[in-house]
Image (spheres, rainbow, N blue to C red):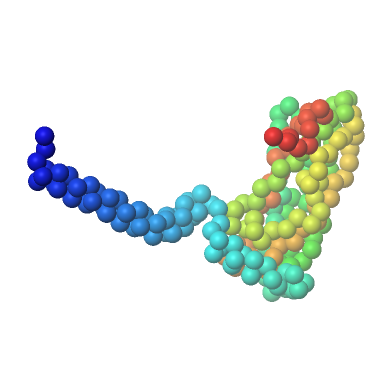
Length: 191
């Protein structure tokens, strides 16, 4: 049998541990805010605060403002998956635009095989901070593209760079990774 003193000590210890756990959880809740900011910074994602800043920076673009005092160089690049016998090249590899200006660049796509093939272009922007300020208004990457055997086609890209682009970013690269899409593959899978 346990004595009354031992039971009392056990209760105090349990109370101490539960209190320490509650205080630790409360402190961890406060630590999550800077940890979330650090995680967003390390992974390259935007925090809610940064998203609000980006949305505010895009406001001048909606008004149609063009910043003619500044130039931004946009480099265009394509990478084709090895099993896709296509060639896609921009007619201009590098263009200079004023922020807020709408610009069109055509890409030439060529199916170098005799078979009909469907492909999809996946875009990415570098540096990643510029991605929020680059808008594709019309792009061949929005849909899958099917080219007949030995077909050559001009595919447009219509874009704008927001005047809110941070001044330290003077150039950016728009890269397309183009991959083969099986014709039988559904557009969207429903779980």
